[in-house]
Amino acid sequence: MSTIRSDLADHATPLIRNAWYVAGLSDELDGGLMDRWILGQNILLYRTEAGAPVAMDNRCPHRSFPLSKGKRVGDQVACGYHGMTFAPDGRCTLFPPIAKTPGNLRTRVYPVVERAPLVWVWMGEPDAADPALIPKHHSFTEPGWAVVSGYYHIDANYVGLQENLLDLSHFEHLHSSSIGVPDQSSAAIEIETRDDGIFSHMLYRDVPAPPLWNRALRLREPLITRTIEEGYRSPASADGATTIRAVGGDDVEPRDYHIRILHFITPEHQDTTHYWWFFARDFATDDDELGEMFRSGIGAAFLEDKEALEHISSLVQADRRDDFREMSFASDKASVMLRRHLNKLAQAEALEKA
Image 1 (cartoon, rainbow, N blue to C red):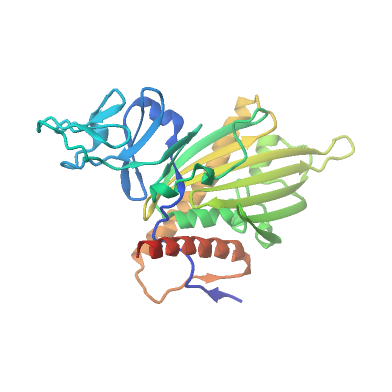
Image 2: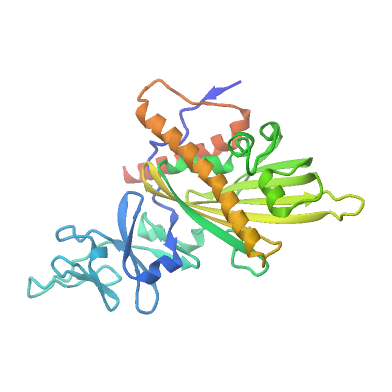
């Protein structure tokens, strides 16, 4: 039986500001001044001479010239239009057209924390920006793991991407050539809620290996046991863990292959999203050819997600019927929990502003 929900986050739900979002990769800030749209605001990103990251409103408060088109002056940034200059804390230290710069003249800066290889920014109330709230994930910098990564710009709202990552029932159909297997959508899924998020678990015993794993691992055994966990951590992040056990045989010992996938999701605008992903494995870590195979293969699967979400977004934006409501089923339990949670966060922020 289906149910119709009206308390779930969707493409129109206000973006959640009181959260840590990935502003970019550490090495992106090494090239000087750059800008990025985050939650509908254009943000200037750069480093001080000591290497500390800075996140500042990119729109000069004088005549709206983008500060990213200006120049660095030591630790400060000078606007390329009239020379208005700002320190890393947002103070205006110089405005050449007037003799004395007002002491209270400032532009907005945003709390920023670097945890390489990521730079995180807080777009909400500055006093609430506790670095302890940055989501904790399996470390992809630990020894013993090989990592490949990628980035996609998605022309769709972030809620759909978060839901997609938690939804294990679409693998069989959308990812049939890579990570899905027949009958996967009908397998039992366990849902777990913890203090650190919402998690979907799935276990298959003695099933064929997905096409990507067969190609990459060159498995001698026709059947595997596969466990999958996908987890929502925050509006800005999710992660996944997969263990593949080669069942073995008369002359083949059982073997476990472990995969960790980290997803970082930053709304660009209401209907566009930045998406960074990291794929880590604990086997054949010095095999660059295998790493490239995984980068290509898992990247292709995530590209399928991107394209599906963009198809949905395009249709939803064009179809303006007020009476259309999506239906949810038992298989959508994790998705419903996630979307209800995001809606509550957005509504709580709206009440605080009221």
